[in-house]
Length: 240
Length: 244
Image (cartoon, rainbow over the protein chains, first blue to last red):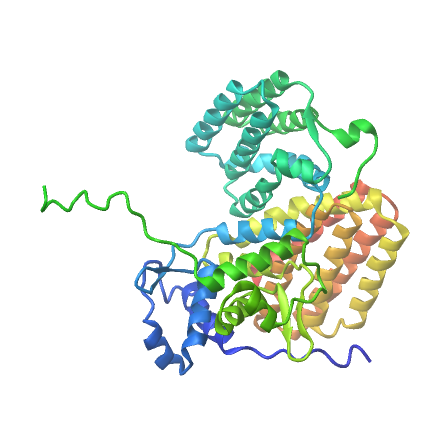
């Protein structure tokens, strides 16, 4: 029986307006910087009430398709991947994904993505990585500062793959890589030897520069061996 | 100096003061994300919300509608407003937009699938439970029954990928796989009009066979074989996606 009937979902007017404008932006009919008609004109165009139009605009704004400038004029935004980064972060928060899951995911997949970095990096990527490494070398005594910077560095490694989808997932995980959230997830991490880890990463950037895929992959693997989950040390994995 | 307006207001930035409805939306959203409000739980009646937020009915209603359209809540007449279960829909939708805006390419998605599904099948082959096997087998069996319906068959493709990712027992990996693979199947079923019925039949045939082989290697707890057949499977899928 339960396959026979499904809930009836009706589209609300503001959703229809939202989708029409979204479609115009996605197809390029409306370009970044373009002005949308005024609320009053939209009311005439769509033959809908003021609240309906306003809600559609608020939703477009919430999805970062448009921004409303003072005076009430709506302008089509320059598109970027931020909206997806946010929805990934939100999803992880909402589903209460454990820190172990995120940590293990990065540990396992980064080594597989690093060949893309070696193949696609630009000189700007390298300079950015070196800059972060330099900052890291200055805060080797503070594990909190160091691990936060370290995530920036890993983000840089993945940005250099020039695959925006990889970057989106890594950015989405970023808010979870803070000492606050580690404690919230009732686990903690530690680095066995910061000096050794720093040396590995410096060598890794050189391997990328030399386009040595195998060496780069080995170094990524080695770098993660320097990490330890406290729950691993104590021998039990707590599920958040 | 008095007439020189060029430097006047240089330190001012546009006022981004939040609208009341957006502020309410944010408050409720945070409560849902933090788990203070759990899926299935009911929100107070509209009248009470108006009192709590000290805002007018249209404002509160606008906030609720925004929450509804972002899939956080379901508003139903008579039964009140309930908090939804978290789903990957929003992330999938944004990925779709990014592809349409040419910010993410189909190749980018295939590259992510390649890595993450390989990890998934490898981990599933090592960690799968008896229950996981049951779920994966059931999905393939159900898919077999709808082989004549291309759209439905593709929907089972997403389910099968999801079941494998679940069997990897890494939630992060599951989410990444889910988002990337549903894009591929959505794309294939939305472009189904471009191919002949005969070709569709053929696709269902080989996808079904390859899925079966992947499952067999997972049951046999053979991570290497699982990775190999899955790599081949993704190659076939990506070739088809580019041909469509």
